[in-house]
Amino acid sequence: MTSLSEASSRTLRAIDSLDASFQKQVRGWVNEMVTSRIEPLIYCGRRTMEEQAALYAKGRTTSGKIVTKAKPGESYHNYGLAFDWAKTRICGSQTGTTRRLFA
Image (tube, rainbow, N blue to C red; front, side, top):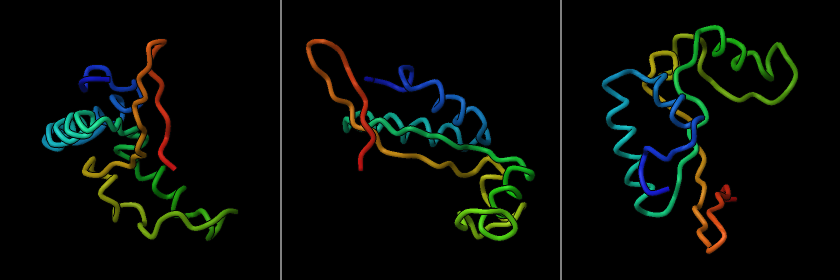
């Protein structure tokens, strides 16, 4: 990947879910990361209040570990001003390009 235009569809969908004024900053950040040969996989952008409530319930009223301290309305995700991401490394070769998550 050499630019944001080649980012994964999941990353692009997540960016598109963000607040319009924040999208420009995130796109610039993604381009800077790609220049450094790191492709960020943005897997979560804006969350609905219902999605936040379900995450907040984990480890409290539903099984699993607690994954957030933010109740609905308390997370910047609810307003399109936060995203979750993982680093992937771009590994080029003569036979193609693969992407690997950093451990």
